[in-house]
Length: 162
Image (tube, rainbow, N blue to C red; front, side, top):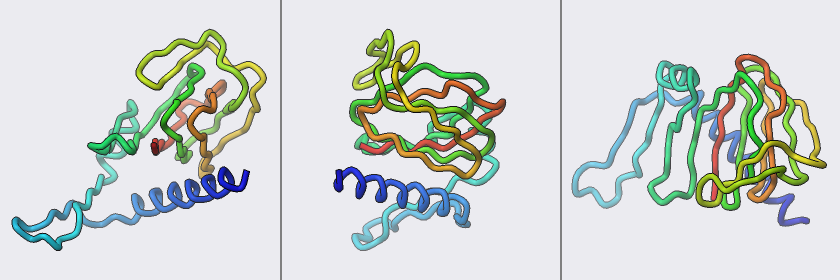
């Protein structure tokens, strides 16, 4: 249990740092100079115009080339399917709106929709939580989850971490 608690704290810190860094970023991009072996890794910024446009439909902002993480903007106007990710932990930060979010329990009518991804009609015996602007929730891999009620619009960041 201590490992899970420490992992949750680490993920909460990571999510908070990501949101703060996104809000405070001021430069457009910085890449290393050709041949400079000691230069910093690339810094990437998404200005507010791009982020806001991304929230219009939901999109992947960043996908790590090694598949270790993804950062998405998400938009919901209605409830979603039950989900279970076998490899990714979801760190979710609510930007706008409210939702009822169910976690745990069992996915009903679950089907594999992509490698390591299961979707289903609903969740049986889960725990309901109310989410609102500013909330952060961490869903470890292997835990079913589903948005069952959402305001219109409901906007949130998702950081998926392997």
